[in-house]
Length: 305
Ligand code: 0X9
Ligand code: ZN
Image (tube, rainbow, N blue to C red):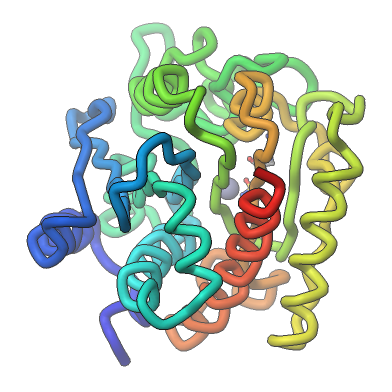
């Protein structure tokens, strides 16, 4: 199997980031957007395939939940695919000619490292707090979108602990600060999770419909249909709250409210047979499906503007 068909330790991913930048000095920049609770760097790769002025941008983050290993694997897959097929695939060229892509391969490095060394099923980050002996905040409950209402918990020992206040965690704050300072160029936001095979859009923090609900629904429907046609696999789609559950404080809803009107959370393979323990032999199909969905949505946005 190739490098991209295996899972990689955090150390390996940091090496990969550096090597990718060195091998593609004209197209890849590495931006340090902050550091984790345990002081690990949070690196974003900026893919800029040409020097057109006033380009828009797309953001993809992976690994917000530590145990969802297919997610960082997807970010690596996406970068590799973009750099390899820009010259030969007209869809990816059309996307990358019109927008830069910011990729954060591991949003929660402390948690990811912990799943490699100590507890494979860890979800949250690894922050500690004087007032409790329980460790970790659910970073996808820590953003400022109906923060800590129904679907999150103020109990530090739960898996869906929202933290002491919105953006209390350094990982959340780094992402939120970066997107705030780039909000005029970022048109599309993707957050990659697993598992359960769903293409979700806002809102998850309320049952209300987003202002462009029908436009978002059309986009994910087309993406899901393409996945079914090409890969014979079923993805559910719809707003988060109506498709899975109410879950406030998520990055997608927060990005949407910031003004990024094309905001999505993808839940990759599988539907529960292996769950978070998806075997490496399934990585290529899982990533190709998600890649098709990203390309379908990004192309639609490019065509609109
Ligand atoms: O609950 C979550 O954070 C996500 N599911 S997971 O099983 N990967 O934990 C779904 C996130 C959907 N979006 C929001 N809740 N904002
Ligand atoms: Zn998740």
